[in-house]
Length: 458
Image 1 (cartoon, rainbow, N blue to C red):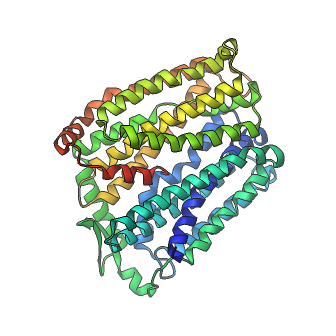
Image 2: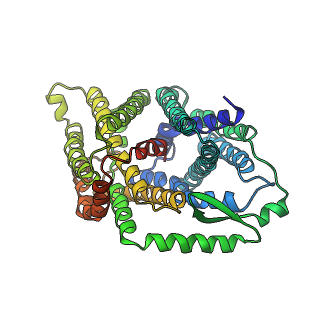
Image 3: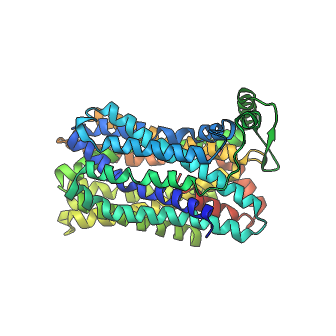
């Protein structure tokens, strides 16, 4: 393994292991800041904002070199920024004493990972293009996914136990160490330093010709930005692009009762942090199982059929949460812990099987010449759908009066959120042209599965 390959592995490992703080964030908002479920959902939504503008981070690194480097300097900077954010959070309520400060610091922590994700993705793409051996590209993709999965499984196993025994502040302090691995990885990246004057003249032209970026001398950041928007707009305004893109957004944007269910699990069912950590661990393993099932049995199923069956099955299986909320599972002789653990694992498998077709769809509608830019934009739109889902869930939670100690209307909240999963099917007609292309291609197109596996961390 070369030093640069080690750098790639480190950054992707951090993307997975940073999930160590996920459970701590939820308990910090609930127990330390005493936020309501709706308020906690809003904070979580704000913390996801840096993931919505990933193309911007790529554009900045391409066009504005830092100390003569487009990748190394920004990787180092993002590592330090992430460390500072999590170190500040580790000071607890003595420093982070309101939801807005928490929102800002969580968002800065997300920025550190989102920006570094874009940077390391660009390095992977560059190295893949330099190699004519397809096995090298496949090995890089496998390394990326494998390290994210390993980091995620490792962090989820210990997250709950650490929160229960040491508290959220301690977990944040541990999390602050991981971004420093990103900063360290920067020194392993192979990149030639350019004089600042030369670097400022060499502005990446975002118009991609033949799948490769071309650089134009004497350009400007403003001109490159205009060219980006012009090219992107000429593509996006076509119905065969914006139609499926709209469907992708709607697919992700249905309201989620996640925060309310977390409060119900801890305040009403009295699930301990350690047990919730085990649930998270089970989800991580189930996610791998979902990916395996998709690649083995579902990746050649037509997209329209796949989305339709996924929505119907998700609504049916999602209804099982109503058994937990109503307590009916106990009448069936199933404990709350066993039911929650099993239900979470099953829904996670289905979630992965439903998510991977979105990546395939995004890859299919990207025309040649702007693949990288448009794919990143579509993923940002998909992430924006996730933020919309959290905001809508927060609004419904507030409207129905579900609080930290009042779950009278939680059944209605979960039922509404669950059945709205079917609503995106009203827009499935936008996929007609994609389905027509699939029929013309026949069985040719296995490459999308590999791209989908790589992008699962997005």
